[in-house]
Image (cartoon, rainbow over all chains, first blue to last red; front, side, top):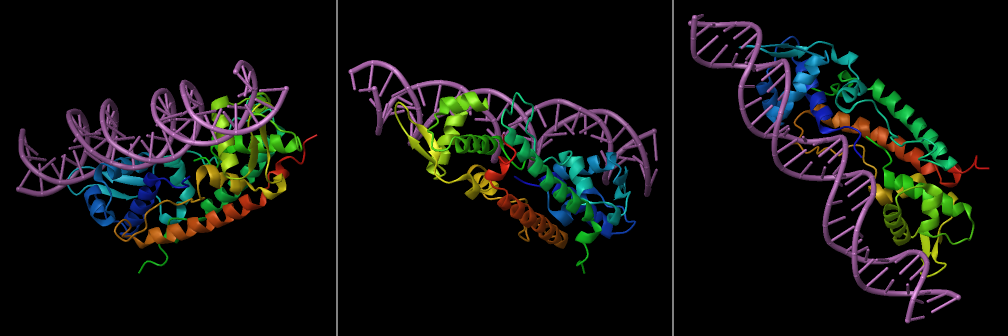
Length: 135
Length: 135
DNA sequence: TAATATGATACTACTATTGTATCATTCTGT
DNA sequence: ACAGAATGATACAATAGTAGTATCATATTA
């Protein structure tokens, strides 16, 4: 039960890395060197981040990626949603036919409360805040 | 990203159902009727709960299951641990070789804080508390 | 001893995650 | 114009975890 999958994790690291070099265009190849992750997988992730509007890209020689949004405006949950869909801690079917016992509904309520708390916390964690200790 | 998998969910429902009929021995077949879940899957789950000491079982005609521990002493996290292992919201490898960027360590810290909060809440939810509204 | 119930265990199906591989397209410098 | 360098699009493959099925052994009871 992972809260954050690997592509989300890679995306966070890539965004942080790109964000540190203000303005500079960084290519996928450079990121691979810095972050030590599989190149084709990272490329796919970068393409997604571009499509979703978090990155700008430029093709051709000297091309690569820059941030489209500053790190303090990107929260963990934004990145998670892109790669993992909406945060849903319960995925049960609570139709009567599936769940004849009222206890399930109480279960769902309680898990939903936890979900709200988790989402709240994830919203307040910006990518900027992950860099604070960085020398 | 489910917090609770289906076998955990079924186990909770089965335990609650057994707990309601105080003392009475309930067979897997009866539970299937009440709870509408696949019989072989439920059987496996009941066997696990027996091994783990949450249920007592008796074989032969008139056999079945009774609670070994009362519902107010069983928390959600107890059942989750049995079927899902320890709660770990991060499963990343944070060795230096995998994670050259210090930002990951901050990420891990923040996720760990959320994990603590989630675990705390799960501990306080007893199976008994899932039955309170039951008529 | 036959019927009934659980115990043990091996096998299968499905799905999400975690990648890989390939070709097309665009941009830059010469 | 063209070669090289970069991303864009897309299809495919490997792995692991979840969700179940199937079968036979064992114990209990009437």
